[in-house]
Length: 347
Image 1: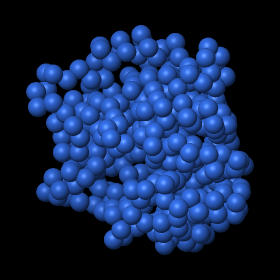
Image 2: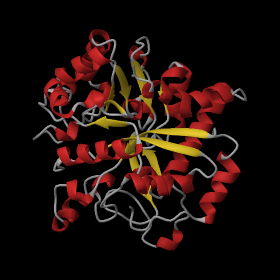
Image 3: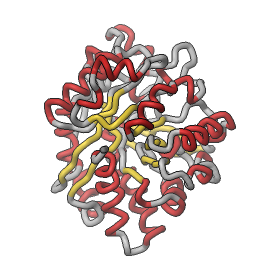
Image 4: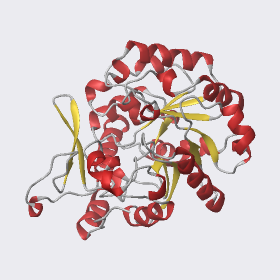
């Protein structure tokens, strides 16, 4: 759990005033990381070095985030709603991925929660199936490969380096889902990434491919004209995890099929206090305290920030109103609940 997590009266006021009349009764968060501190793979004396890396490797602030932590936080954040999550571990380069997956599967077995398995770079998933019986596990929906797990690349790798063919072949054979975090700084501007995505969409039509973070489109420059080539394929979906920019979301909602969109938050980062902002076509975290991985005030009393998840919801609401006007009921139900239910109904 985050060290200073608190849900304040001011946060509840934001929910009541701006979001309560918008959200459906049932919500599925399709993008939630959970892990135990034992699987991080580094000791506390190494935390400072990784704290400068990204918010999700600030282990001084958030050493672990369990399924119980998710339940506790989300119950406060979505008052009066029935909220559930789809879980996977924390794909950190030094992590014990076996332990990460084991914890996620343990949680799924205990609570019947849906989960993704994190494959390693060269793992043969057909052999993994023989060893772990993924298909026989309640809640198993697919895979979450990650570029940070490709050794020696710092995340600057190709899609087929992080996503080996066995994952795609297995997913295509069994109608599974692959949640894809697009690698590299160029993201969808990379010709190699676009070429690989076209091959995946065409060659593995029975595998549902979710473009996490709208294809890592945290700024409008990352999305304009860059997702359109994928929209003709029935097996390409998008989630909106950690996207705070309403222009990105409006672009997505205007062009993509409403049945192929998923609500995701990127919890627990979404439960931090602040906002993901765009400056000069790059995205940065603004937080209520000065941290190595973001911008923040040197005087804590100056900050009057709510939770990132509420900034995400504000952007979603703005974009949905822009696209659908007052006819929000059906697209809202699909986006926050029904579309995720299609994934959970895997044959």
